[in-house]
Length: 282
View 1 (cartoon, one colour):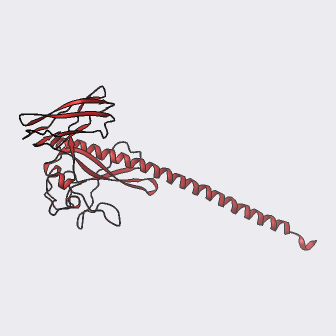
View 2: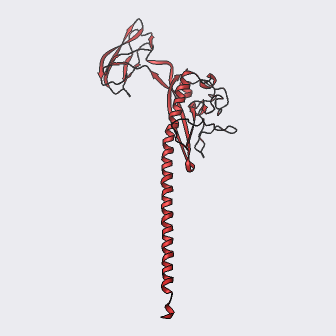
View 3: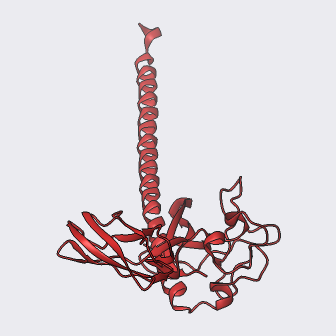
């Protein structure tokens, strides 16, 4: 029995060490879980901040592109080399940039840096920074035509969508069509009137074109129902030309917005958006 003295103490110490290691492991597991949960929360917040950046960029486009506060040389005509941003707003590129295959970011080319906007001042929690760049979707990369950088925005170069004047609506029914151009040379055959109901929410409207002195007028024959907004009337055919509801010189230009978010614990976020804005298109 004397040879067994102290063996219980050794076993107890071994058990105590094992329990201590298990406790340390549990604590580290809890800490790691907390870190992971925190990183996920920061990451989710960064995703929300991307939308804040897009909203700020959209506000900039609608405020500056429509009221002319950006210098005309940057707003409409860009005579600088491709990849060069506007001097007054370095984060705005009048021509689309190619996407870098490695970074997946717009690439302004050798010798040019990618200029981000100042940090978004509102709607961003402490510890986060949101910046963006805006590219008007024009230029050689979009128009697929040589020497288009420096050109004024056109339907061909900027892929602008045409804008049509909507029909007037009362109590959910179409009650009138305004022509932006009544055309000329219509002597026998008037154009056919077709309503495009996309986005208007209603159906059933019909109209016919009439001829007076070679020009066209439109008479609504059925107002339909359920129209929350006016559908557009598109005129086809006829033996004349020019009758249309197309708003002359106006189109919906498209812009690519790239948003960068940085936050706590080296959190980063990146997203791209496409937004449209009606503007003068020659």
